[in-house]
Image (cartoon, rainbow over all chains, first blue to last red):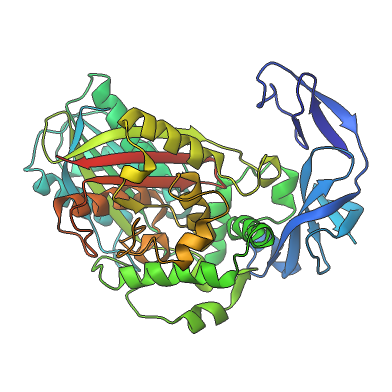
Length: 100
Length: 377
């Protein structure tokens, strides 16, 4: 998985930024890290917008990656608890779909 | 500190008004505010509105107000900042007066949502996310965001779903006394706890409704009425996955910090508060971020009843977004409407002797926040 790490401070994100929002001086550099992580928090979405209604109910999980100080918002189709180990299953229409 | 004062207030009833247009609601609130202020000359108009273009196909709201009210060829603008559109419109009016350009400004907010289908409204609201992101593609929604926050909050504290229900219950009890509120039907803790789940752990009563309604203010450099002691605004992360601390809303914290600094007051000095409770969980975090209670201890204050009308720090005595209703562009102005009533001593759920009041208005998943501190003269 691609993450973006500041060259001057500890800030990192799953999305690129023009300038590091934390230190304001550094620029972010692309890195490849493992997609493995753990469940930081989650919700089961029962009422979904029209474009995702066919998937409901589905689970949206905030994953803490193991190899970077980065969190990623993903979709899952199984019940989860905070702390569960999870990994990327596939990418679908720009969404990371994870599995336990 | 500003040299800007609130001279007039107006507000429609909040609810479902299928036979009224967005324009008629907007004009009703604006005329009330003008009459309350004694019909002064108005130098500019700012209107807070979020989805008039997408679900009512109606823009140019500023010019419509100026034209229909016969205000003359004054400058006007519509202000969009998602659910903070009203608070940002007020701030633009204040900045216009502080710049020296205007003496008196009409600031209004309006939304018309009830005529559209839930799917269309949900789609329109999703425009307030960063739609070009893996997070949006994962299927996250606004109630979903606050559901994720709630589960983490429960994990890190001793709070439970019952504490969220206490917030919903308090705001419903407050709305029962507010003649302009959308929901004036009593409920019970059992009904709140057992309501259908929207985004776990949040149920129906944890989520603000869709609403039709408008509110308006006349603000002026002319001394009198209620003093706007401070106006502050901040931005925050536009994606959940970018939050440094998931249980923080940095825009709320920073706009609060700036407002206290500008006003020269502390959280302890504030007598009555209107907070942007788009979800029960949002109120839980905002009472912490605004410094009323310690981080991760808001649930204790709720349990002790400290945010009730009879508590030490009354929050959302209007009923809040959860029960007064949430016509998106009008919400930030409706908060001020209620707090001016509190400072005039004429509010439903009046807090005796209220002198300093604080309003906090949020947009997006913590993307925008405004804080205004008001003072009785």
